[in-house]
Image 1 (cartoon, rainbow, N blue to C red):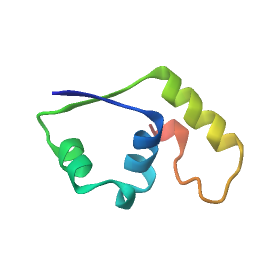
Image 2 (image 1 turned 180 degrees about the horizontal axis):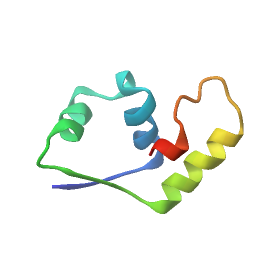
Image 3 (image 1 turned 60 degrees about the vertical axis):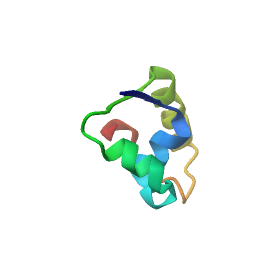
Image 4 (image 1 turned 30 degrees about the vertical axis):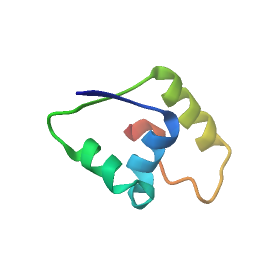
Length: 63
């Protein structure tokens, strides 16, 4: 199954996986699923990163 992740889910999966539900973790960890995200999500992550918030835990270039 192809899964299109929105920006928030992408951020949680990459930096705060404890915030994901058990069902979301199961879908994300299933090797049969193809995880996709848009270029707009990367743009949003880059913007959030430049705000310098202490709780931001994702390095955009690693996505």
